[in-house]
Length: 363
Ligand code: PMP
Image 1 (cartoon, rainbow, N blue to C red):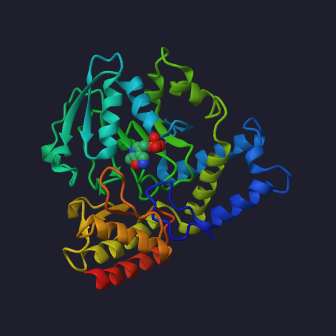
Image 2: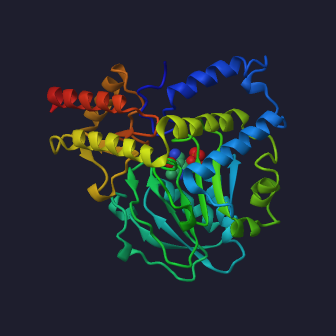
Image 3: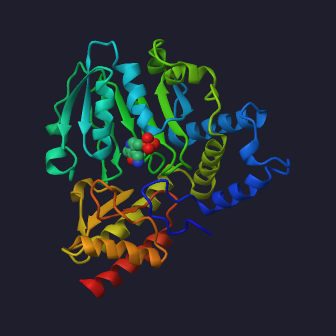
């Protein structure tokens, strides 16, 4: 069975039970004789898939009725633009952005195409090794919105506090930690997250929007970039990624039925991260963590070994030991272990054992 020891930054591990079901249904969906890959997006079956996924998300996350749930294409990267097209363009205001790592740095030029952007904080000069203290943020009470990324996937930095000012809409890219822990949706006007970390395969991006955001959808953009059109057509405006959305539904069932919800998932993720960080910290100086301790992510741990040659050897030996996807992001190199929801404690234990053994041989 593939994927049991997959530490990739994304697309990442998926629950084995979900992979098994998908593989059977690619050949025959529910005894229908049709492949899952050949079912019409206009079928009743698919309309129900979307409706059921929405319903489970509302229950699991606690998404109130005055928020819309959309399954869109174009990845989280397209949301960098769609959000700014909807909430910034033509307002005459500026939006506040937090530049906390590789991905938030990518979001900023896209927003600048649509209007004025103010950097309320940047960690660029310090190499994105920590997140801001609340008192360091230079927030504007008249900002169009505040945009930030709850978990910087590359650097492994995760917010444990809620940045922002009362009265200023919060927009958050939760691509790499949505569904990994409870979240209070009403703190945000917009949340987006692509599926390929904790929710499913690549190809679909979940967007949760307050009705006020939908109401501001611009008419002078291509229709596929208009949130209202997607709301009106219940995420079936054009041909959506049927397979990816169905896989998300199966993952949502797994999260609800096998795991027992987001609080239970959070507890599992904390236990996994505690084990990994203990292995990193076991002998200071050998595994050198990228992120400041206070801002460590439960999802991604980035670290280096004493030399680039040892980084490479670590990743290669780990792969031979069945621990896959540990190479660091191309922007910072080193090693990154991603502990998304479907990474088991057993997998983390195997990684920690390997780390101890590797250090004993090379330390
Ligand atoms: N935001 C975050 C936090 C990410 O981790 C990534 C990619 N890993 C992106 C945005 C870009 O996502 P996509 O490739 O779906 O456009």
